[in-house]
Image 1: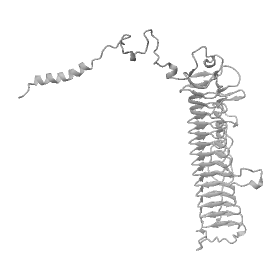
Image 2: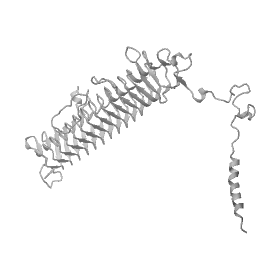
Image 3: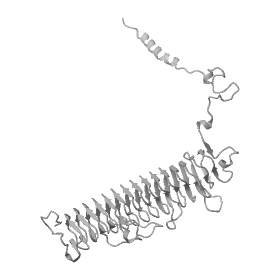
Image 4: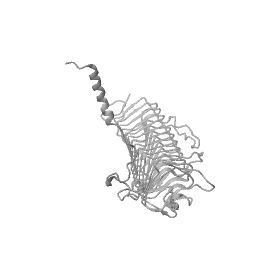
Length: 475
């Protein structure tokens, strides 16, 4: 039987009416005291918090800076500084503008800036203080973490901490000397440092980021500091970091350090400069006023690129130049590339190994343009692709389009399985017949294929084309 249309419409309307009735809201006023179950009430009948409730200190532990409690003179700034004298957690509640520093006089402190800024605005004469420091008189306090905020303006230093300290997620811009300084066993993570806005007056001895022994710098950038960009002492690591346009060297370290996936660009001295026993992996140095890379005895450089630097692309030196018996380098270069550097692509002392390295267009590269405050560009002589001294081995390398020789060597070197092409001087130029030169492909070099002193190569065969399996080939 058919249902009349008005009945169907009435049923349809009722269907939508029911949810509307069910969703109707009750009164918004809170229920009177005592009407809730005892377990749901926050206050006693007298109005005091029940024992199950938490205080603000329990829900947000720590001490605020600046403190609103007049009894906390050390934390409210009334003494001209903010002074932390007990271990624990402290946090900013507002921007701090002025010249009052935070002085930490206790081990075991965490200071959370909570995204706020500590901005230097001078209130009178005198040298600016350090924005945050754990150096108090002759004492330095340790095990401190500073994180999550901004330090700006012309403080003498941004942060200066002791041992086993961490600096995380900070932006530091404008300090006159060190941006971040931590002593041994330190961690500097995800931090950006920018130098002062004042005109430079030469490079100073300080650094944007500086750490002691056994420290880690990771995910950091340093730019336009009037000194070194990033510096570590011994046994430390620098990872995923960059140093650009600093007046001194870009990235610097002493002994036993590791540098990975980091960059040095347009610095006023050497791009990446390390002492002995260091490992440099997957790094780049470009348009620096001196060398791209400078390394010393017992180090390894691999998978790295040096381009358009004013001096050598890679310079390997002995660690001890005062003792002639120790005048050796013993450095390993693996899969590195030097391109368009003003001087040699690679230059080394004694006992260096080159494997699968490339040197192209060195000796006539453009190099960086002079910048205000930077030293003048160092114009060097025409460059070799590889300039090796004695006792070194060069295997499966490429030297092309360099302004002087492709490979320039002294005595007792072993040069094999390499391609040497289109260099302005000799393809391979060696000092004497006391070298092993074999299985190389040498072609189209301006002065000729291979040159040895006196035209003699002793027992080694150097034909332009030979069936000898150890012969060198020139076309």
